[in-house]
Image (cartoon, rainbow, N blue to C red; front, side, top):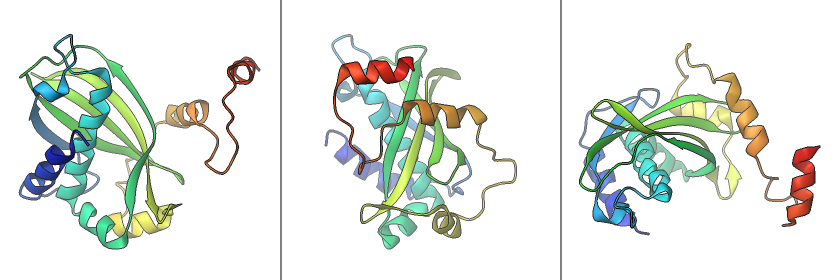
Amino acid sequence: MHLLLRTLLMLFTSARRSALTIWDSSSLPLRVLPTDIDIAMHVNNGMYFSLMDLGRFDLMVRSGVWKTMRRRGWSPVAAGETIAFRKSLQLWQQYTIETKIIGLDAKAIYFEQRMVSDGEIYARAYIATRLVNKGRPVSQEEILREFGQPPADLVLPEWIHEWRETNALPGSRTPAPHVWDSLTRERKS
């Protein structure tokens, strides 16, 4: 909710920026606002993922995919995320969110996103997203029909499969009881 107004403003302004294809990379210029920081006066670690949502929306809007998704009733959901930090973004600092799709498989669309300031990467994240319609996943065939075929050189990095497998939780229809001991034993086996 804290980024709702900022997201609506970004959706409006991104529609007026230069057009892209969904397979291009987008660069969204921003500034660190007081609502982005924590007591240490830098962007809060949890805020990075929320801000990166803006970068993905920018790419979707500028490529026209957002309109298609809304028309079809598709909603994007994050299925997995990982992030690494290098430097802290400080209050009022200008930066860009660089966003691109690095590949897709039968279950997800994978993005790489970077927070960049003065040509330096401050943080980098990988996000696995899914498109859902009425709570059910949208098939890769449907997605590619609407998005178009990816470039021939777009090959999902092999390590992404291992990352998804080792970090995945059971599906929502499979029990996933909270018991620390069983999780610890599973990882050791």
